Image (cartoon, rainbow, N blue to C red; front, side):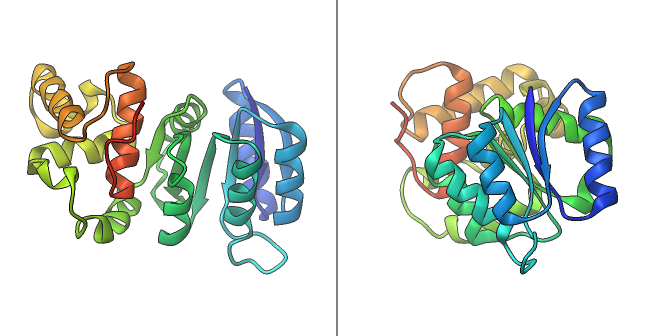
Length: 221
């Protein structure tokens, strides 16, 4: 699996390279500036991009901006964002095209290699890997919107939030202390209430998460 990595801090960049390579990833490019990131993404068209938000030259949001521009040129390009803070506007922009393959992790809440590598693989496969704080920030505005999302019960919202983090059914069951069957029933209800047309469950999971975080529903085909 080919990765383009963007991180301006040398030690962190080298550490990420070694970690990814140790788990079977190939580093197509490792860059440290926003312009270099965009060029690398368009040139190499990797299986997944791992992107720091703040890159030179201004250390503001070059990483996110480059990722957004690349996804315009390469629809569905999987992007895992690493950040010290939640950039709510840009997180929503990344989610807006409804194609999945998006992750947004806060650096100080990545606690081990397995968590990080699992997120990279999940995003590369078209899924989502969202930090709970990112979900909470996005939901501050989404919660005020009307529509099918209002039909979800509190438990269904809990299940959907855990789906957004990338949890499997069994992981959700363990977190909520319920049975796998109960989780499956909640997910089926979520699909129905969000008016997601029949499709592969993996695709509907992604569409449900995107609908939830964007405050929309009924967009799956």
